[in-house]
Image (cartoon, rainbow, N blue to C red):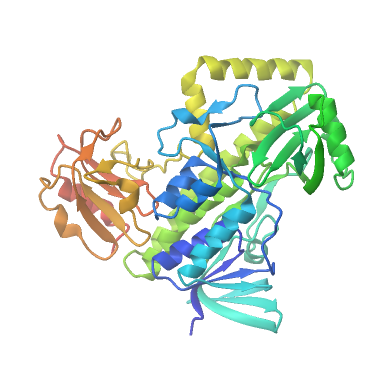
Length: 490
């Protein structure tokens, strides 16, 4: 007998969002977390546009937006020209500065409210794979125990026990650069989003809710493989003065830390009944604050596929598409992070010239700004369709269309596809496809964006990506839709 349908290891943002999504689809889930309480230190600080859209597609984005501090842009490689997120085609064209501790608290509240179990103070020691289930071994305050589940998901960070136990290789490159950060009070804070770069190093200052500023940087002496010891307030002050010419009246440190640029990617995201998501699947330098956000998108992709198979309306082969779709995103993430490290450590004359050139290009080429901003914000992620003849929108992110008196995000559900009859009800035969795992909505869109104005119908996945689309001037859409559903619906 199964204890739960899914065991999630790791109670950070990725594991908590995965658990909440599974519960929204009616799947029983337990989160196993070795910490007895949330860490008050917040390594992740940035919530990107696509993450906010993902929250909005479940109607839970308001607390994040109200608590977070909106910032109109971001950076690529800490270049002097900042990316303008206000140009992004999203209802949330900004990043949110929100400590990870608060993000976790809000996500934990959701998961618990939806009925997820959370076991704190429990450490997973390994698992045993069986034909029809996974036996997850853990130890806690009452000693060892075993949980049996249909599936196991490792969201347990870069030193993932789940990944190691599954025997999944995670190749990459070791750390050669040490960044540092300090969450401190600044009596004379700089303007929001300020940054400095020169021969003496890099420094960025980010305001954090609660009257704190995060100072992040690298100096030439940090290009090392030798651990110099824990960061101190005196060293942080010395670095700030050397790079920016001021310590900004820093005092009362909340957190001081170092981090490296080791970059690794799991060879595969699925091993039978076991899956990896977030830092368990990909490790990289935290450039641009993308890590947590990519992890949440991993969870968004995996959750509905697990739910669809466990609820019986999709074949097990659907689970293979999790690796097929998200592993390339991990490749892009690690490559982009490496490229940013190169820019962030280009302290010599040639490197600084390269940075100036790149900054001028971003200013001169708005399309480059938009592409980089969309890439960092996860809005540019598209999943290649299996059929080369598929509609160009297939695999892309669906925008928040206004359909009648509601938006598309408000129509999405964790437990079903959304079939849109965008003619307002004139597409014959689409209603017959309503079934478990698929809902039909009719209505003509108001001011649709490019590519959507000529659509007759579209099928949108629970994670907000287009699964199929048909133009108004095309053939009868019924046959094409039936073909598209054949691989995802029983």
